[in-house]
Length: 342
Image (tube, rainbow, N blue to C red; front, side):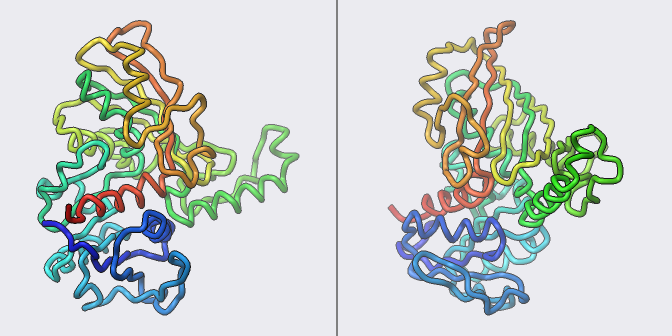
């Protein structure tokens, strides 16, 4: 099932951090929508938000609002996605969902256009967008897997506060300002009672690193770490590939980084690897990939590519991408572009 050539598009969750970026990307990429509708919770109804050279009036997410919509770009909490995705499909829409609600459903394709665009054709009305950390790792891994055959991934992520929404960035800013005001305590190496109390994160995030994103499960891994395992396997159609992840929250505003160690079934040719990455869609090879470089841009920046001196089948690299764009909004819009006729 494809979209009409000029679909009516609804962005649900339009006032959130990712929703606003979705609107920006739809305009920037000149997506051929006949109409774009901004939808959010009832408390945001009536607000004006920017779109292109104009603005949109936000509509409330309520029964009937998705009638007549061709494409729904959904960025909401999981429970809201579960409640509204099926009714949207029943009303005639194709849904691209950015939540975790449908990612593990065997009937719902989980798609990164640079890695498995063909999976879009298997949709039954809903297409899932992967987790932002998974996308940033799989985009550069996918072309290497096609040549060498991926066997094992060991990943340590460095994930920005915007991954927790606008509240995460605000908490970072507020806590950082408080600690700057108490710089004497910082310079003495003792925060004592100075460290601000957290609300969004498990501990104070300002000038800190937190090796926990999501709840810790029975196996000791967090929900975020489990997502990368399950999603990487599904996207690459590798049900037995080994994926070991440690997900860490760091005090940056935008940009998820990852240190990646990958082992393949064949020996890797280092010169060939560099060529594969330079020509891979969605990848930009750079000397020093960093969060500031990625912010507001589309590529997954990859650098620090190294041979494993102890294993001819393995290599390491660092990657970073804007988690609001490629990690969420851009990936969804790229899926929407695949759905266009022709």
